Length: 169
Picture 1: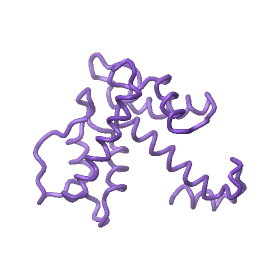
Picture 2 (picture 1 turned 180 degrees about the horizontal axis):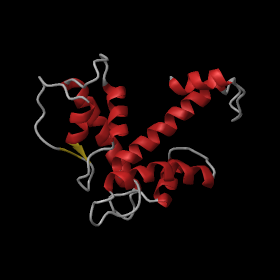
Picture 3 (picture 1 turned 45 degrees about the vertical axis):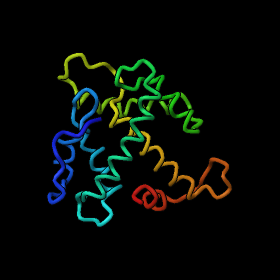
């Protein structure tokens, strides 16, 4: 993860500017969905951009995630393989089926192919930004599920509208 260019505190970067500025270890720009997610998480005043203070918080957040990414990138390829992703989810406390983990991995890994199809020497796996996006997405889904799992047995009953409300929260 790197930041291209100097940060101008008077110019609040929106998604396009922030996406161009944040790059993965292979110098590919962050995925647009990841950037949008980051802005939603750190834009405390709701203006659609990040202020200097919001950017500092975002940078610290990404630095912490970078440490996790490096910890699970066992082969130091700069990308997270399926096996590395599976180990990360177990370390985060998830007990998920192989099939679901494969589906989740494939969903985000396919975004990597769209982003970096023309990057020479790119290997398969998830880039840093997509690893963060996958993990945050899973955490959000878990939080929504827990809201409805009153007895914590891993099963819920809810109407379609309750489901939609939870997914848009």
